[in-house]
Amino acid sequence: MKQSQLFTKTQKNAPKDEVSLNAQLLIRGGFINKEMAGVYSILPLGLRVIDKISDIVRDEMNKTGGVEMQSTALQKKEVWEKTNRWDDKIVDNWFKTTLKNGTELGLGFTHEEPMSNLMTSFISSYKDLPIYVYDIRTVFRNEARAKSGIMRGREFFWKALYSFSKNKEEHDVYYEKAKIAYKNIFDRIGLGNKTFLTFASGGTFSKYSHEFQTISDSGEDIIYIDKEKNIAVNKEVCNDGVLKDLGLEKKNLIEKKAIEVGNIFSLSYKFSEPFHLKYRDEKGEEQFVYMGSYGLGISRLMGTITEINNDEKGIVWPEAVAPFQVHLLSLSQNEEAQKIYIALVKNSIEVLYDDREISAGEKFADSDLIGIPYRIVVSKKSLENGGVEIKKRNEKESKIIKIEDITKEIK
Image (cartoon, rainbow, N blue to C red; front, side):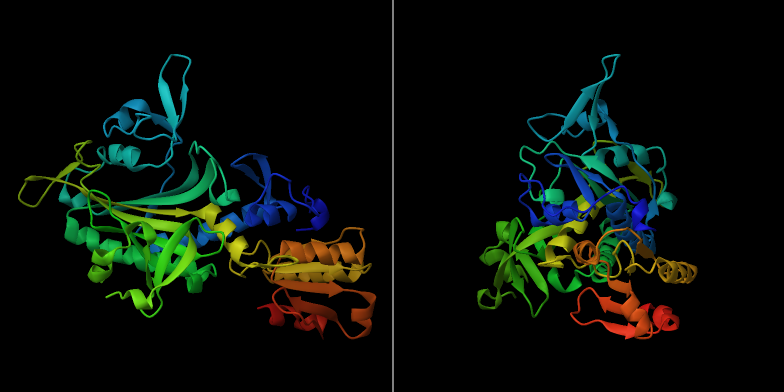
């Protein structure tokens, strides 16, 4: 993509009312635009990052046997009344509206109920199970106070998978697969070394659920980490009994602030019972379907990556989720830079080509702010020295390489 074709522009300063670092950097870099508190447009550069994260999540979900679909944002009142979660006294973050014929609707904040209701049309026999269905979509939550930039918004992008199993034993096998898949996701997007499987409350249907918490000073949660075991406990459930259940010793635990980037729950029959979601087993007897849910905030991950990977100049994207692999800067050498751009694209290398007629200083500042992994500069000086200047965003020193060696260097 040529940068002159982008309608977005970088900014020296973020909006005065934006206090979170992730939103400040993403707004200044032209990745998102703040429409109102807790609501952000995802701009072209930001969408490329969201798509990269989504593709990694999709790949790992598919490997577990997940099947993707697209659920609806509009939700029927009667579906949610079956679990009493339509009541504002039970769930206080609904966005609700009314159709012209008087029918009440809500904007989905999660999808346990509609997915359970949907499956009553498709599950009747043990032969229909297990089912692992997920979607990647926008959900809506009427937060009393939107904060933390895109990490806690009123409108956000996430992945939710729901498992439908014959029994607890079959569910437990998938649950362990999901743990591995989540670990793979965090490793691939560059958060693996800072993200911990964290024991949290399992509610009324299991002893524990599991969160995935990424260490960050901007986190809203407090966790206690045992680095030897590579697990953590959320402060909300951390007590002597929990520590005993897990060998965990208070002298071994480190307290850290963290961002919850994903969670997985055993739901048991909490949602299958209200919807009479049953199947006939091998003996012809009716059994309730055993369920689980597996959530992951995709726009929250973009914010978390930004919070962790930055310096005084801007964002430093991990290669797997960067909007482009290469930022190509032409310093009054457009003819030669255009040739390089075409050659890189032909070699399936994603390039943002800064062909704008602005100063070199502005181009360098924008490149650092946007944070693409490789910067290639084509200048009169570099050509006289035998090629182009190449520099990795997370390194201080650049070097000159021959034009014919660029593709090899990047790949």
